[in-house]
Amino acid sequence: MNPSEQRKGDLRRVIETVGKDRGIKKEIIISALEQAVLMAAQKKLGGTTVLEAHYNGDSGEIDLFQFKKVVQSEPEMLDEVEEIEIQEARKLDPEAVIGDELGIKVEGTGFGRIDAQTAKQVIFQKIRDAEREIIYNEYVHRKGEIITGIARRIERGNLVIDLGKTDALLPRTEIMPGEQFKLGDRVQAYLADVTLTPRGPQLYLTRTSPKYLMKLFEVEVPEIREGIVEIKLCAREPGARSKISVASKDRDVDPVGACVGMKGIRVQNVIQELKGEKIDIIPWSDNPVIFVRSALAPAEISSVRMDERNRTMEIMVEDDQLSLAIGRKGQNVRLAAQLTGWRLDIISKSKLQKRTSEAIFNLQHIESVNETMAQAIYQAGFLNARQVAETSIESLQKIPGYDSLDLATSLKERAGSVIEKAGDLLTVGTLNDDGKGTFTAQPVTLKDAKTLAEERLREMMRQVGSTEIANGKKDKSE
Image 1 (cartoon, rainbow, N blue to C red):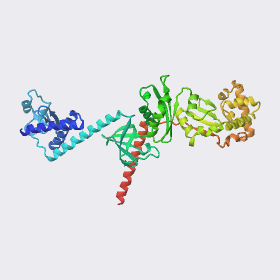
Image 2 (cartoon, helix red, strand yellow; image 1 turned 135 degrees about the vertical axis):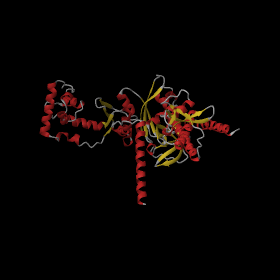
Image 3 (spheres, rainbow, N blue to C red; image 1 turned 135 degrees about the horizontal axis):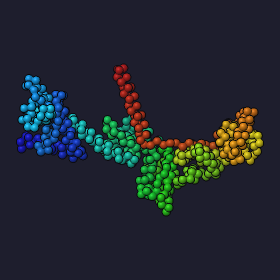
């Protein structure tokens, strides 16, 4: 085999081997080779030279073309790098005319070792870029899935997970409280986001997101995967307790029973993966009161007063049910508020009775307001004369018996007179409430995975910047 045939065979083998080993398309490798030859030739022949490189499939080589403008000029005025005389041009192309750009094949460029090194660097850079794009395209479609890998190292407190083809980041803020991983441990997490950075694709994992819990149930419960049972909402305090609401599209399928499984095997598998996190499975309802009652289980609710305008519910429980409704450190009612999206005011029966009697006593100080009227005003949400005096006429017209403008205006004026005479003396019982026997929980708006990932990325970049600044100061001091 002569040298030219060997080179031709070598180049074709490189294209086929790299493509097969790295899983990269043939076109990408050829483009890299063309760019490498082009860069090396540009460096050799000068930066102003107009060049193009094309892979010749028949010869198995990269053909290099130098483009020159066809001109009519005296030999001493001709710029041989960028121009070609019309007579010479027509020897190459009989149809050439003045002003054409003629591509002339460059023969015998004789690239040296430095040029070959440049070509090699460009080829490998192109391959790295292609590999990064392949990895990004593979994992960007897997966002929202559960990923499993091996814990390889720790970077600034964040755990780096080896997924085989690439690494993923499990930030320390996305690891459940008290959870510890050793290097070499198998780690399972939820793929929250995939971003393309100058250093390649960056994968962000989480074990604290409510979406991870929902995905675990989807894996364990066939009815969820098949669309028969749907997880409507999820509220979670990672590592401690969670609540999920479920609904069934088939009347013959119990959504709670499907998630619990025979002898609790399905929910136990999820709890085991979450290191013992308690999980309450609640039937979803479009009736807010029924839904809130279920969300506060196992506490028994005596009564619920709902304020739809402010999305607030006042929930009365028996005194012995108060601690159960609130939960340890307010956890039960806090998760219920987060799950339902309502502000929940838990109050014990004795506390409510005391507050009711104080409010009715206070409201009866308004002229011409008897006990029955005071009860109606209280049921409308007013606890004392000051609140009546400071509210709008429209709000007072919603009280039974005060629907006319004149009656509502008169009630407001009479309440104002009481405040002018007595000040805050009649509101002491409400203003100085010790808080015992009551608890309030506000719903929390959950951020989506992308927002969380972007915030984590910004925080990590800020930390990296701080480290570099600190190192710079240290170098100067040394």
